[in-house]
Length: 372
View 1: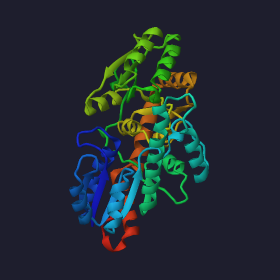
View 2 (view 1 turned 30 degrees about the vertical axis):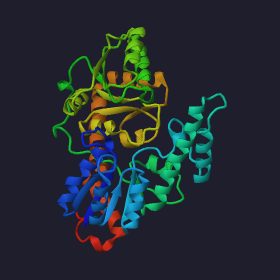
View 3 (view 1 turned 90 degrees about the vertical axis):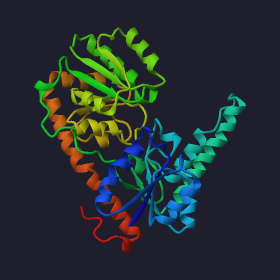
View 4 (view 1 turned 180 degrees about the vertical axis):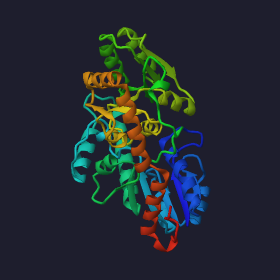
């Protein structure tokens, strides 16, 4: 079988979509599947045409209407995977409503206010055009998948959307994480983009709460972003610079080692994260996670992680204190989380699920490819 995998990224770009694609390609090739990838952002349309003509099935990873139309014109079956929220109105707030209600909510929330400048009012047309493009693309594809149950449900379509998790590769080390190998004082780590969506300010305020209780610990902030200077200023105002270190961007391997040395990873997002990949990476190196109950975070973090309500500074502080008071339990939770992701998020399982979908669309193309 010939499978074409589409995305909208540059080759050297850091992206969860590319991580997903690069994780499943070796597994698919091991099963005799021929693979080609195409970037509809980077590659020329002549490459689109030649690659689509070559493929038996196309696996799309973005809402690219022009690409989908060419695929259907050439008679190709399409499997799409949604990696991000389909609607702007679910970015921070989500409630389970019907497809028609979701569209009404989306259109209402994107309407400009009367006092908005003209260019902002005109931007509403851009938002509606993008929504229409996404919806038209969705009607063209043959099979719908999403990177989490939460994201699949939030699409609110009148047709089914299957969950196809982003897989995580084998952990850094196979040996059990040991409390004696952790550096002291115990560390918590945040990894991600430094902007309001990610809720780093919530973490800093929780650190202030613990600092007032004379707890001994360190918090490492790995990443950069538009709010970096503002967050450093906040840490200074809260008088917690002795507890918090801003490390900036680190190479991937160094980041994993930093997470592995931590007592817990913190994901305090205030937006509806579809499926936070950094949580899976923490689990893969036997580090437990403390996550806000937003979007797909609890789902990918698994039952052995610790949770707090969105914006609940005291709730997060309580989770941090629990880990500091019970380090062996935090480490045990990390080991349990590593078993959870090994069972639910392996590349083997994801490749099998994808090939099963291919088999539903074109059973004549598959023989033993799904055996793995």
